[in-house]
Length: 341
Image (cartoon, rainbow, N blue to C red; front, side, top):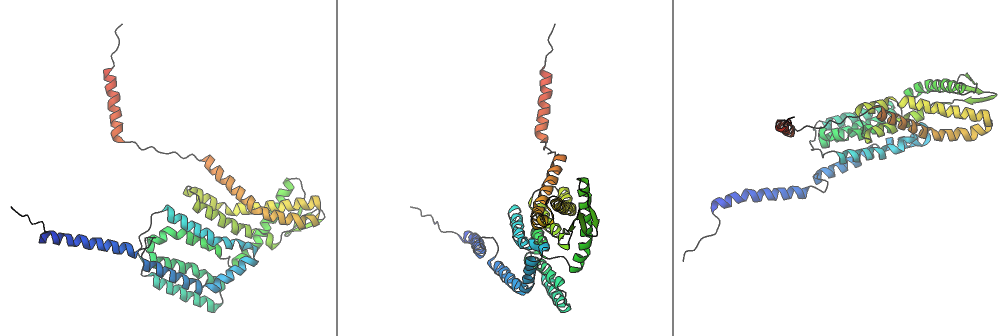
């Protein structure tokens, strides 16, 4: 009886060793990454950097919250971070997961940003000191994820700009021109609707009543809030690039129109019900209706853009099937026999 040795040879053992090592490496890699697919050490480093970043800029964030509480022009700041998180989530879900390529130069850039923050703090420039947190977020993103991660989440970072109020100097420069535009536009609309009014500076004379277009009524709050709303819409709603540009360009006109409609409605209430009722009720109600009016105008503009444009979908032509169809039609013509009469 012949016995056959079934034990593996040396060559087979040598071939099996690399496969076992590769399997062990793959299992070790999968165990080192969490459910998110990123290394556990990377996730821990990002968490630590986030905590340190929040602690370092905590005084600036508290100052921003005080501004949002006391300045109606920037009360929308409370919604900026939640909307930015929604944008981040949508970009993350709708796109492929980026390959992390940490950028080593992010650390020097972060150091330069912190040095600039210290300089602005010494100069007493609170606005620029607070604005450095955006540059710090960009530097941290590049440091941990590189340019692929930055290309994915940059809209969410850019939206955080609406957290910061306008510089005081720019705010003062915009206030008076916006007041003049609101006053003159409201007077023109009121006269065209049959109510004769006279403007004296930023005061509208409605008969014997005086309606003052104060600094708080210059439309700056509507402009900033509407800019944040339209920017979020252009990021979250799928649309063509040129439509996004048209919507962004219409922010200022829509904000001015909404403010003019508000002042005109208040002036009509002054004329019909008197200054006491108009100032106590109509002014407040018209102020609350400004944002819905602006959103309706944005919706009408977006609908008009979709009505005026027709998107043509190009059908892909398969050259193989196209050739078969041509040959079939040619053969059918050859088989046709003319009747004999």
